[in-house]
Length: 135
Image (cartoon, rainbow, N blue to C red; front, side, top):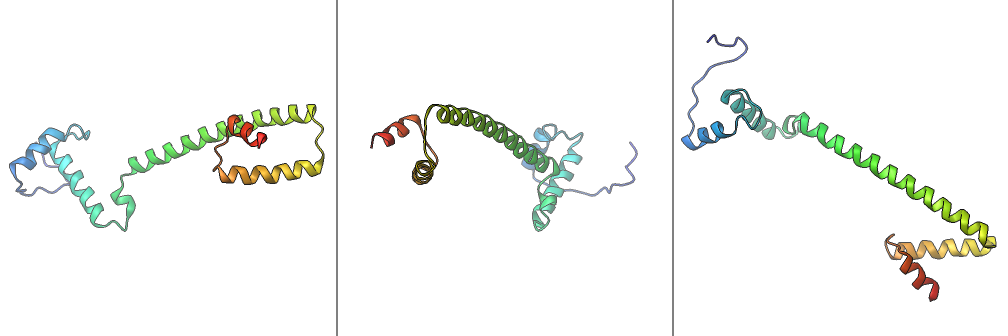
Protein backbone atom coordinates (compact mmCIF):
# COMPACT_ATOMS: atom_id res chain seq x y z
CA UNK A 1 0.00 0.00 0.00
CA UNK A 2 1.57 3.33 -1.04
CA UNK A 3 2.04 6.01 1.63
CA UNK A 4 -0.15 9.10 1.32
CA UNK A 5 1.86 12.11 0.14
CA UNK A 6 0.30 14.57 2.59
CA UNK A 7 0.96 12.45 5.69
CA UNK A 8 3.97 11.54 7.77
CA UNK A 9 4.74 8.12 9.21
CA UNK A 10 6.31 7.90 12.67
CA UNK A 11 6.68 5.45 15.55
CA UNK A 12 4.03 5.66 18.23
CA UNK A 13 4.48 4.03 21.60
CA UNK A 14 1.29 3.67 23.65
CA UNK A 15 0.06 1.40 26.40
CA UNK A 16 -1.89 -1.70 25.37
CA UNK A 17 -5.01 -0.39 27.12
CA UNK A 18 -4.85 2.80 25.04
CA UNK A 19 -4.64 0.82 21.80
CA UNK A 20 -7.50 -1.40 22.98
CA UNK A 21 -9.60 1.75 23.43
CA UNK A 22 -8.67 2.91 19.92
CA UNK A 23 -9.61 -0.48 18.42
CA UNK A 24 -12.93 -0.52 20.26
CA UNK A 25 -13.95 3.06 19.43
CA UNK A 26 -12.57 4.25 16.12
CA UNK A 27 -15.61 3.04 14.15
CA UNK A 28 -18.01 4.73 16.57
CA UNK A 29 -16.31 8.03 15.66
CA UNK A 30 -16.95 7.31 11.96
CA UNK A 31 -13.23 6.94 11.33
CA UNK A 32 -12.05 4.75 8.47
CA UNK A 33 -8.91 3.70 10.32
CA UNK A 34 -7.28 3.67 13.72
CA UNK A 35 -4.74 6.17 12.39
CA UNK A 36 -7.54 8.61 11.52
CA UNK A 37 -8.97 8.18 15.02
CA UNK A 38 -5.58 8.88 16.62
CA UNK A 39 -5.06 11.92 14.39
CA UNK A 40 -8.48 13.28 15.36
CA UNK A 41 -7.63 12.73 19.02
CA UNK A 42 -4.36 14.64 18.60
CA UNK A 43 -6.14 17.51 16.82
CA UNK A 44 -8.77 17.64 19.55
CA UNK A 45 -6.08 17.77 22.23
CA UNK A 46 -4.21 20.49 20.34
CA UNK A 47 -7.46 22.46 20.24
CA UNK A 48 -7.82 21.99 23.97
CA UNK A 49 -4.29 23.28 24.55
CA UNK A 50 -5.01 26.35 22.41
CA UNK A 51 -8.42 27.04 23.93
CA UNK A 52 -8.11 30.74 23.12
CA UNK A 53 -9.22 29.57 19.70
CA UNK A 54 -12.62 28.10 20.65
CA UNK A 55 -13.45 26.81 17.16
CA UNK A 56 -10.40 24.56 17.21
CA UNK A 57 -11.55 22.98 20.47
CA UNK A 58 -15.27 22.80 19.72
CA UNK A 59 -15.78 20.93 16.48
CA UNK A 60 -17.78 22.78 13.83
CA UNK A 61 -20.35 19.96 13.86
CA UNK A 62 -21.02 20.63 17.55
CA UNK A 63 -21.29 24.38 16.99
CA UNK A 64 -23.69 24.01 14.06
CA UNK A 65 -25.79 21.51 16.03
CA UNK A 66 -26.05 23.93 18.96
CA UNK A 67 -26.99 26.79 16.62
CA UNK A 68 -29.70 24.59 15.09
CA UNK A 69 -31.10 23.68 18.51
CA UNK A 70 -31.23 27.34 19.56
CA UNK A 71 -32.86 28.39 16.27
CA UNK A 72 -35.50 25.64 16.56
CA UNK A 73 -36.20 26.63 20.16
CA UNK A 74 -36.61 30.28 19.08
CA UNK A 75 -39.03 29.22 16.34
CA UNK A 76 -41.15 27.17 18.74
CA UNK A 77 -41.19 29.92 21.36
CA UNK A 78 -42.16 32.52 18.75
CA UNK A 79 -44.97 30.31 17.49
CA UNK A 80 -46.31 29.70 20.98
CA UNK A 81 -46.14 33.40 21.85
CA UNK A 82 -48.09 34.20 18.68
CA UNK A 83 -50.80 31.68 19.61
CA UNK A 84 -51.02 33.09 23.14
CA UNK A 85 -51.26 36.65 21.76
CA UNK A 86 -54.17 35.61 19.50
CA UNK A 87 -56.03 33.96 22.40
CA UNK A 88 -55.39 36.99 24.61
CA UNK A 89 -56.70 39.33 21.89
CA UNK A 90 -59.87 37.22 21.66
CA UNK A 91 -60.37 37.39 25.44
CA UNK A 92 -59.74 41.14 25.56
CA UNK A 93 -62.21 41.80 22.76
CA UNK A 94 -64.88 39.61 24.40
CA UNK A 95 -64.42 41.37 27.73
CA UNK A 96 -64.44 44.82 26.09
CA UNK A 97 -67.62 43.95 24.19
CA UNK A 98 -69.49 42.79 27.31
CA UNK A 99 -68.27 45.27 29.96
CA UNK A 100 -68.22 49.03 30.15
CA UNK A 101 -64.94 49.93 31.85
CA UNK A 102 -63.81 53.54 32.00
CA UNK A 103 -60.24 54.57 31.16
CA UNK A 104 -59.25 55.41 34.77
CA UNK A 105 -60.37 51.99 36.03
CA UNK A 106 -58.46 50.33 33.19
CA UNK A 107 -55.28 52.28 34.02
CA UNK A 108 -55.53 51.35 37.72
CA UNK A 109 -56.21 47.70 36.86
CA UNK A 110 -53.18 47.59 34.53
CA UNK A 111 -50.94 48.93 37.32
CA UNK A 112 -52.30 46.41 39.84
CA UNK A 113 -51.88 43.56 37.35
CA UNK A 114 -48.27 44.55 36.66
CA UNK A 115 -47.52 44.48 40.41
CA UNK A 116 -49.27 41.13 40.86
CA UNK A 117 -47.56 39.46 37.88
CA UNK A 118 -44.14 40.70 39.07
CA UNK A 119 -44.89 39.37 42.57
CA UNK A 120 -45.78 35.90 41.28
CA UNK A 121 -42.99 35.89 38.62
CA UNK A 122 -45.40 35.67 35.70
CA UNK A 123 -46.99 32.37 36.78
CA UNK A 124 -50.64 33.33 36.69
CA UNK A 125 -53.52 30.87 36.74
CA UNK A 126 -57.29 31.29 36.66
CA UNK A 127 -57.41 30.12 40.29
CA UNK A 128 -54.97 32.88 41.31
CA UNK A 129 -57.04 35.42 39.38
CA UNK A 130 -60.22 34.25 41.15
CA UNK A 131 -58.47 34.46 44.57
CA UNK A 132 -57.16 37.92 43.72
CA UNK A 133 -60.62 39.15 42.68
CA UNK A 134 -62.19 37.88 45.90
CA UNK A 135 -59.72 39.82 48.09
